[in-house]
Amino acid sequence: MPEKTGLFLWNNQNLFSNNYLEHRLPTTSLWNEQKEKIGKVFEAVKKSYGMIKDLNLGPGQEADLEDKFIRPVLTELGYTYNVQPPTHRGFKKKRPDYALFKDSSALKIASKDKTEPKKFFSQALTILEAKYWGRRRIFFPFFVISMAAKEESGRLSV
Image 1 (cartoon, helix red, strand yellow):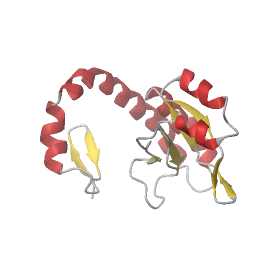
Image 2 (cartoon, one colour; image 1 turned 90 degrees about the vertical axis):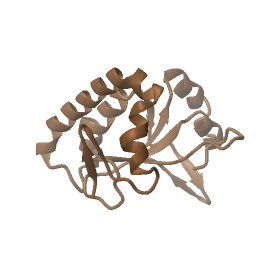
Image 3 (cartoon, one colour; image 1 turned 135 degrees about the horizontal axis):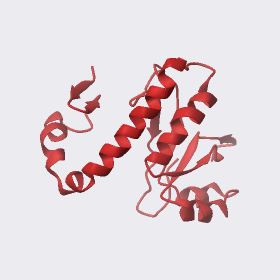
Image 4 (spheres, one colour; image 1 turned 90 degrees about the horizontal axis):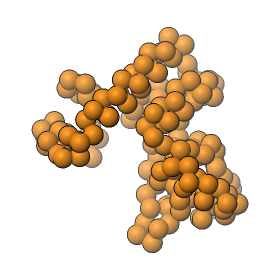
């Protein structure tokens, strides 16, 4: 069951200790430096959610959800994104919903190599799969970031 502490709600999947999340993280310098900015982003995301929650978006309405919630939230969080970039896995092409980039210059550099997934994704921070609320394996309301971390060599593991 997700825990709620003040403004914070999390479903800890043993990634961090609750003690760290509750007591140590809020005392870090990064947390304190970003507190005001995070508060503004949180309010903007909450407002976006308030505007779409009564639409009851679910199966078959992923495009509406992305247009009305996911993309505005990604923009508010400061990401630049590319929609459904192709990847290769074996002989098949796979398309994550989004590739997230630090800024528009990183996306511009990556776009020059769109036909070469390894080069394209070497510029990406991560990929994102957007799913409706209630779908299995959702960790944050309405979207889940599919972890695809860069290895030390600079390549993205997809």
